[in-house]
Length: 397
Figure 1 (cartoon, rainbow, N blue to C red):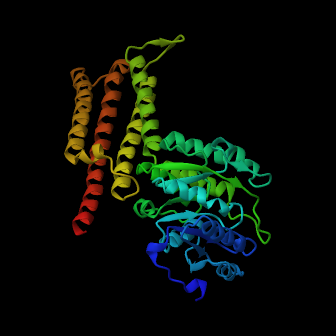
Figure 2: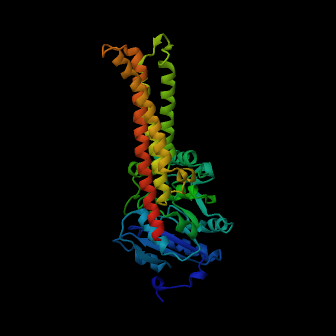
Figure 3: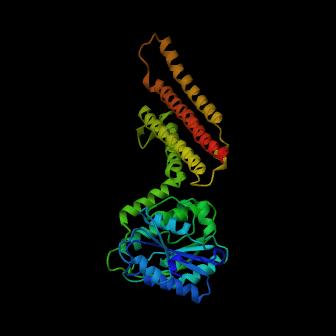
């Protein structure tokens, strides 16, 4: 039977090796051959799947000759090819890796050993920090000493995920983990999305040090574009971390606003400068911007949880539209009262001149509270809309 037409018993397959491919005729044969040989030598029941993304060379034929089965993926992109390849896999475990001969597929058994220990995801690590090795000429200077270390550090900082090489494209994982992650990125950021979502869903992780070899392709260079794909990865970090994108900057602005109010209301001098109503105005601006960020963090977290992008946040799920409206109306009501006090005094003075240093200390906070109240009320209604849509979808299911 032709290798592409083989249909082994799904229950007999332990590992599916998935390789994305776009004109990799120079190296795909070596990669498939190594994967098949590694599984055979280690007694691993497996298959190799080539997810072809529109190759115009002999990549598919070469892969089939060396023991792979191929699938055609019309949607362009590294992530799209991998998603279709994984969805076509029949193994309990999946290992993904590039077909450019930069990863040594003879190292497959080390990943399977970790997966058999019941880890959900086993990440390869090329960087010395995790015990890996980068051979001379295997990784561009900017990627090795800035891009990969910085992005990996951000993942550890923002998501508390113990991975030293987030961009490494060689990794193994349980098929059940992939099925519950609902991955969506069609581009190079697919690999990072998998790491982040695995962490957010509490997946158990392990690392395997590997050696990165120079790209073996001669017909063309790497598909990775440094700045474009680096920005896409950073953007993914921001999307999946409302805490860092919105909440913490908002909290910092609110703290600055409180400090500004504490200094400006009693006209405290700082380094000889009298902080007056101008400081109060700037502090109010900081407070409004900060509160807007907090509201955006809340809405985005609710949306992400209900769309399956992140696990639901139970405390936010328990917040009701009514609670937000009550808080907003109370804040706005206090603000209206503060403004009304000055209007009343102005009326008592027969609408004459006002003592601005005094009256602004009432009007500015009052206006700020009205704005905060309005923002909160509108955001609460928007949160209700987000929850209502998902509730309808769940009822229909």
